Image 1 (cartoon, rainbow, N blue to C red):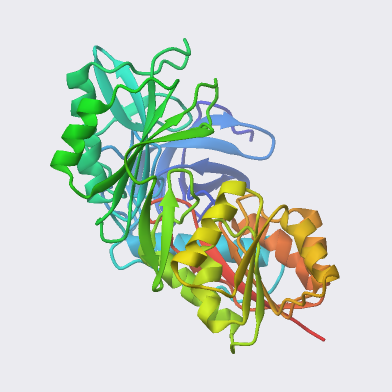
Image 2 (spheres, rainbow, N blue to C red):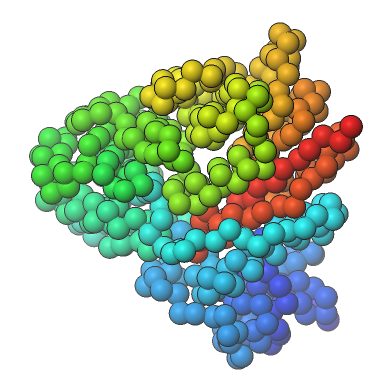
Length: 451
């Protein structure tokens, strides 16, 4: 029996995909359906099919799971920011642990234990960075988040996963934009000024930064800045970032400071970091501290180690470990981040850290030629995982330990498989819930060289 578009079926949800969709099977043909939970009997409509799998839409939950909750956010079904709010928080953890375990053991066949998820005490209001697109519709300025797979903005008054100060600022800035009749960017026409508002805050909201992303350099913000800083004295940095390209990329190359400093300062594991508008910095403070502490624990530092911190960004993880090691060597491909990392080392009085600009694989090999013998390498790559050349260089450098932080279980298992062939023993994998209510999952794993 062939499953066809617009067919209706009843089935029981057997599992989750790595994106948190439910999996049902009709004659062994898998169909993926959003907003349903494992174990639920549902009636669904087939929306799309191909030879290997299909997509469906839940029409009715016949027997709800005891782990189903009403999504706490009223915008949930319209907005694309969160994907798994109907799952109770324990069920979200079960899904995330399962996603990592499937990747490591079913796909990767690595036969390694997946630990329980390092969860959050309160899985809401955690995001310390908000990127809010702006649009002009029906005579007024709207701000919010995109609908799934579209560029239509859902106009919102608050977001349950961003910090409360961000919600207050978002609503206030939207009011100011409407009062001032500001010019808003139109994507189709490539005209108009304001594209995005970015809000960042430190862990206790004592310093907050607002960045206006604009199509061109025109500065129309004098009154808005006065109003914002009067109402929100914790706003210590306001910048304008110029992006006049036709692109989906948010930031442009030039940032102009309009008020205060061009950075805010945050503390992680007792170390201070200056964060600028374009700095990469983890969005969940409480969970980042847990993640970095776990990385340092897995490294088992005794004080005489040389650590290479690859993909080091503004130096966070290496500087957090700097008291417990002899030397930290950070490598980063973004020039401004290297300068920020050096600045952060100075800020913390860390004199055993040095930073190199370039591709990690090239710089690492050069350092080894110069006689550097790293004991530990920290690896925290982007979603696409490590470049094959980087992995080869890593195997050549042959550190005793590798601490791998991953934001994508499928590239993690691929990279671990390779490192296993290079003589590394893999510790149990620990998922860390950096992004509650969403399908994203971070993991951390230690690897040790077997002689």
